Image 1 (cartoon, rainbow, N blue to C red):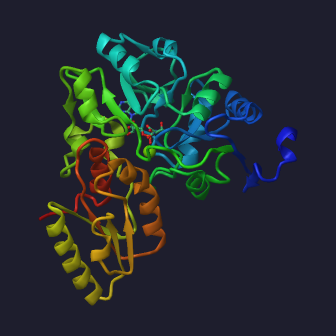
Image 2 (image 1 turned 45 degrees about the horizontal axis):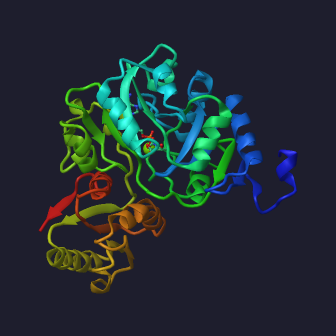
Length: 366
Ligand code: TXA
Ligand code: MG
């Protein structure tokens, strides 16, 4: 362990060989950032917070370092990784033919939860983009992420810092659960603010196409671009043939709980009625039932476990709680998860996309 942090038990510890450093989310301590940046420069792996979820970072220009990301996460070899930058100038090193519409989005939404898919330059190793001729780039809005990027002096490739198939981590604790012993360092700056991943938009297609709804709402993108398309898989109302999966990540089942999961969508009173009915029939069969409710409906249910995502009026709160509650329900070892659908306005579209995918499109409309 580095000498400058050894003395402080509370802010530095090792878990199965992974160094966990507590950092201030607003004013990250430079000595800790330097330790992490040094690891990045040497080809190591560092989990760090962004405004969306925790990422697992490595030097994007170092093929051997990026290979470690795939290995640590057990990530399928055909799923490309988002490259994070602290400076707009880096985009022009990593990408070519950057059009005006992309520049508009960068100046309006960066730093922030928006990832642009652009044509890739020769500088980027094949493994980072799994041999594609495009590259996904974003500038995160988090002081720790930006400090790490600046101090490392290189763009950082970072998928979400979970084992493949698990919900994305919104706390350092989630990262440790999945990856302790498999990565070098975790920078722990507390829970992330947004809770769902960035929006991924393909700027090489005309009109630009949203491949993954996320932290930057569709409505806001529509307000800036005259034309923008939502990929059918991004909406994920139903399963779409794999052949249509432009974003390699689309065809991987992102997160699937052990339990069977059913989403009930529609008007709230009808949802409540349906979930009560489903609970009763499953309990009769001797099954353990978990319900993902909202504040408004919470008192209406009785089951083995009932959790609220937050108020239906507050989609930010719901997005912020989603992945943590999915992890909790998995840990409770229920047989069935019954989840309420929420509005698909704003951040709701990302929430519904993740829920529908997690249920493998087992959706009941009432
Ligand atoms: O908020 C986020 O985006 C987080 C934080 C850490 O930045 N990162 C994240 O990375 O969610 P990951 O690897 O879990 O998801 C990246 C998504 C995948 O669906 C991947 O297929 C897609 O972006 N992607 C990456 N490069 C692409 C490319 N060149 N073309 C199309 N899709 C791409
Ligand atoms: Mg991920």
